[in-house]
Structures are given as structure tokens and as C-alpha cells.
Length: 181
Image (cartoon, rainbow, N blue to C red; front, side, top):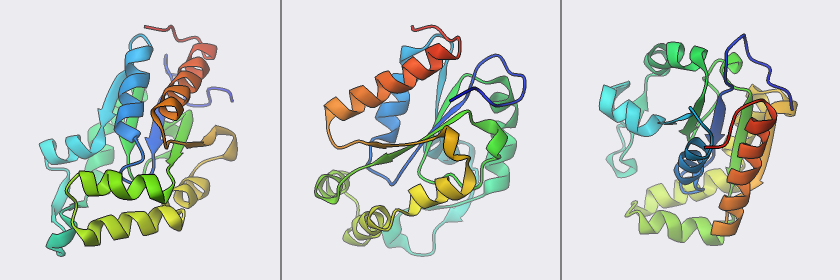
């Protein structure tokens, strides 16, 4: 994998996958592991900055309707500068030029289901997310949206796998000239 974006000093990484696969934990640890990198928790940013069209009509899903244009406008300058580890559960609306590495985290259903229940999600929301993982929805979005040479699909079932995934991404960033923190 080679850094492929426009002339920016540092690469950008997208960590994506179904809710509950470990995106935020992985992204936080990658950003902490490399000098000058920022973790962008996009779900949190969307809520804080109102980058949405309000609550979804199905209250049981307890989610916002994403405003993709507002999100892209909000992030454009930051992404152009580089040094970002973005985590979000969907990936097909970002400009491809933003990312030098896209990591899709995958989790088996027997691990994912209790993780989502542990978050207090409604049964409908748990079921919908588990079905998305079974159907490879996020992985398929990523395959359709990004070049195969920048796309990694990694298992994220255990703490050991999470640590291995973090180490692998940090190693890749160091190969691109970044320094460990």
C-alpha cells in the first residue's frame, strides 16, 4: 500500500464497520500511537455540531438522519491537512481522495450480538445491526467505494485482534514516514 492522496503531509485512515465491531477503540488507539494524528469520532461530531436532519422516524432505532453534505463540508479542511483517523459506521459518501487506508472491521455474530445488547440498544436495533454484519453491508459499501489496494478487512472479535489491528495500521503509517508516539 502506498500513500495515494493529494499532496498532504500525513495520510488519513478510515476505520469503518457495523456498530459494535470496535471502530472507536481501534481508531483512538491508532491516533494515540502515531505522532500528530487526531481521532475523529464522526458519530459524536455529527451529534455535537448538528450535522444531521433530525431523529430517524423510527424512534426504536434511536439514530439521526445523516446530512452527508454537512459532514463533508465540516471535514474538508481537516481531511485536506491529513493526520486523521476517522471512525464511522458507513463509508460510501466520503470523497475517495480523503483516505489513504480504509479498514473495515468485522466481528462474528456471537460476539457482536452481546456487545450491542450491552449498549442498551433496542432489540430491533440489535437485530438490524447484526443483519447488516451478516449481509456484509459495510464491507460491500467499502469495496464499491474504494480501490482494493487501500482496503483492509480485519477481524475484531477479541482484545488481541484489536491490538494486532492497531499495531498493523500503526506500522503501515510508519512505513509512510509517520513516527510512533
